[in-house]
Image (cartoon, rainbow, N blue to C red):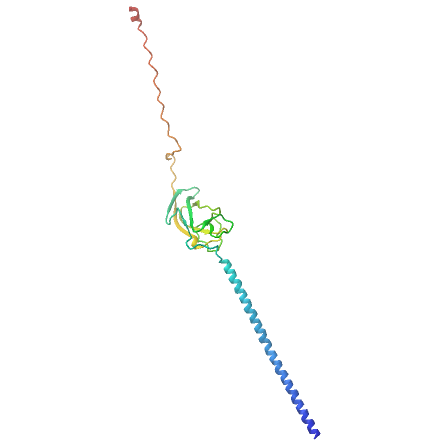
Length: 234
């Protein structure tokens, strides 16, 4: 009887031990399966965070690049005062270039010299045979992009004879363009006037006409000498 009970206890203890081992094995497998899943979730979260950061930086960079030069009233505009689209401009060429006088106007904004950025103000630029500058971008400075940073509203351009497109572009104190709203273009044709032929110089008010010769009075007549024969007869 005692031997039977001992065997039963031994059997029960073995079963319990086996069950415990199985539980530990199952738990271990669960931990092994859970670890990769947790790592994957962390990696995904890190990737999402990185993507959001990159998107934010990209958006900030684009916003900075596209930042406007300042507020522009809805009715503001620029225009050429003296040049009309399709105009033909003639002048005496010097060194192959013809002077073209331009006068620049703007409404809704103030003309100020370059330097400080003051809202509602800016200065003129003329772009020759090139596209207008996009809003918020600096206007180039070269032979085709002429700056009037002193606040000029009139100037003489020197252009080669032929067809040209002139674009008036308004920008702020830092030369950042106000974009197409404050830009205006005209197409003109420049012609060189023929030089005057030698000897055919036109009369000029600077050259006085030759004065007429002064009239000289004739000398008085000499009185006649008395006749000696008549004098002797007396």
